[in-house]
Length: 360
Image (cartoon, rainbow, N blue to C red; front, side, top):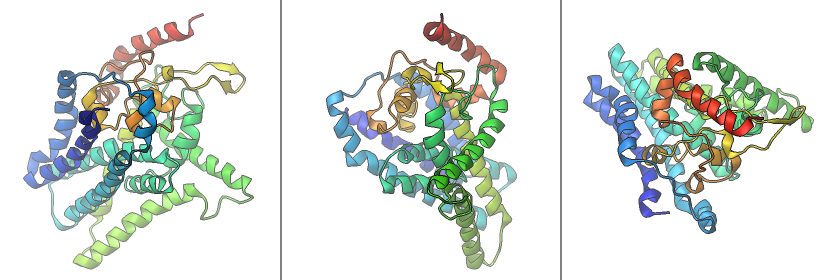
């Protein structure tokens, strides 16, 4: 890997910096993060272009084990925690107009969701206890800790089948997918934990139930912050709780928009009743723009991630046979919010994939 690509992942830290800058500039500058992520980044993607280079297989082991790549994600966990605490303190100690408040919440939610949950996703796939701990810490700050359960033990098993609530179906708009995936991921997380505990001879009402902990820890987190801020200032501000919930909603909605995009309409062949073919690179939509991939720790190389879930982001490969998105995630999530446009852009590509891979 070139030094330029190696250090390009650090540009993700520009997003929280811009969020802070926009806040201190004030007023409409709180929309700065929105403008950069959904305006400037897509333009730069086009100018800089795609990166289809793959790591030499003889170097994959080194890329997997190099501490630098882990360290960057560890640092992000601390940055996200600091950003949340700082933002909530601003809400506690300052009065914002409603438009500033919404823009500030969007800015923080885009940061904690667009990049933060991406990092949590990366860390959550690793066997290291410290990486799993950091993953859960990040997810606590966006009220989505159950993602750790369902994504790793549910989504990766059932992806591109009707059993998976995080796989969107052909002809299904995001607005139909959204409640299905929210409720389905919660239900699946509960059932997965119920089965795991039953194998240990335990019932569900135990502190070993990670689903219950996924509900408890965010409540304890924001409850502790509210108590501390109230003690420090002598004033309880309900806006702090509302802001925390609002940025969390933005964050996990952004995650589910990405989920909607990543597997839209793609289906694994059922080889026998209840048994599906192995997950292959053709079962995820890919995009290879160099800049947005750097921002997202190569999440857009999603095909290799699903085919080889243990691979670290630094070692993910591009596959030509994978179905390719026409734009990076930052534009695709906007298109997904307009169903008629989404179907016009994506259904012809999906039909070409179906004809290429599963025509009789």
